[in-house]
Image 1 (cartoon, each protein chain N blue to C red):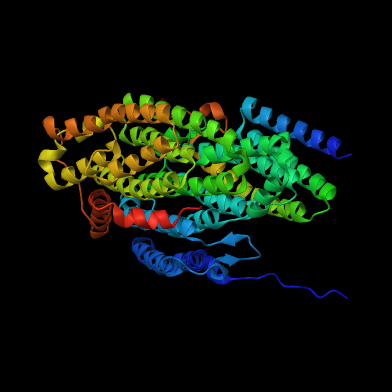
Image 2: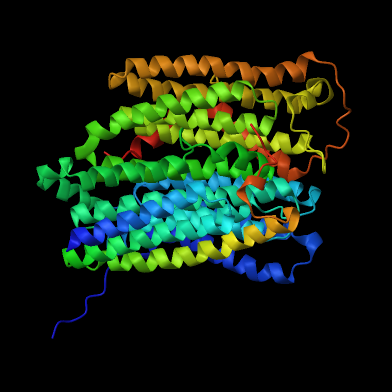
Length: 98
Length: 487
């Protein structure tokens, strides 16, 4: 049973990673990052159940808290960027170049 | 009925973190009542907090083991973490000293800056003393979330917006990898405690070939490499360093890089010594790539902040050379190098802040033409920092590189050291180029807008002392560093 959960979370993690790499909208990218974090949460919970040990579940609570804090800061940064550029497309994050 | 056993909570083990967090929260409250032109008082208060925390770090040195451990083995304030905590506090203190001048000049003196620096420092400290993957993760996130804000702090400036947003998106992305690595390590060993991971791996020989454990190690290495800006995970560094407010660039290049190394070293050396054959190969490749990429791209940079960003990538590579060695000398070398790097880099950035004027950051190398004629003392100190970054004697940069490379030689990594020395020689070009402009070109500007506040002078003086003294008498710092290694 554990394998199925691990495979599911690996698939979710990969979808999230792919999304970060190919999507262009900063908010969608951030949603993909959240999906990666939740895939990890699923891994933690499945492993916690399998190992009969509570550590993984405790970790999940911390991850959720951190994700919420990150969302607050990230959306604020996006608003600040939008005010100056009227866009949140990552193609427009281009003032500085090599 | 079973009685509930309270885990051992030992506040002495997180004393510096507690002090900084309390001061930061008080400052956040005070900030509401302090009018705009008096925000400098917040800087003074945060400096007091940093000094008090520094004393608590000093008093914890060589404490007996029961005093070091806290929170059921989640934190361990050993000499290793105390040395790193001292580095973080020094870089935070110097960053606070150079901030007020810049923030007033750029008209973004909102005051939240100082609490954020303190929170970031508390997060770095948790990373350094965390002995549980959970604590390390939390410390890393407290640090990162504060840094995202600090990078995008100048909210009316498009470059700062971009720096913040870019750092946030890539930082959150790398957190995902780090976390997945932690989850897999937990799955393979059944625990998140560093010491227990090590004992599980020592008991079960099959674990070192368990793909879950190995992939967990690799993914965590990716996450930490991002934090220390090691190639090929360095893509964010130049843009973030260029766009962020200059004092925050100085802070980011010194403190968080050291914090990344602290957690990286503890996880690999303490939790996964059984995988040493795997991770030393990995670190070898990372070190070579990081040094070479950093130095080669830095050669073609005209913007001095960007040049120092690539140089900071290269410096992470030198520290990785010591890490690859995997011995006590290498760790002591990293401790020494991170301390001297904090001094020389923040000192150089302090002078960059002085040369810039509002709206015209004067960040190009040409803007330094004739600086040596107009401001001989400042130019001489800038030259000192650049010599130290290039690794020339008798500066701390030379001694640090010497220890890192000799540790790697001792472990038999001859080719790695050869590549490192060649890189170091190449790096002289771009550091000396600034000096050529300072001393051998005719002045274009009068540099009459430069106002030297006492705080900036203090930070430059402290940095200069911190570069020269360990360069001439390295044994003082090195003996402390040798007592702080993890073996």
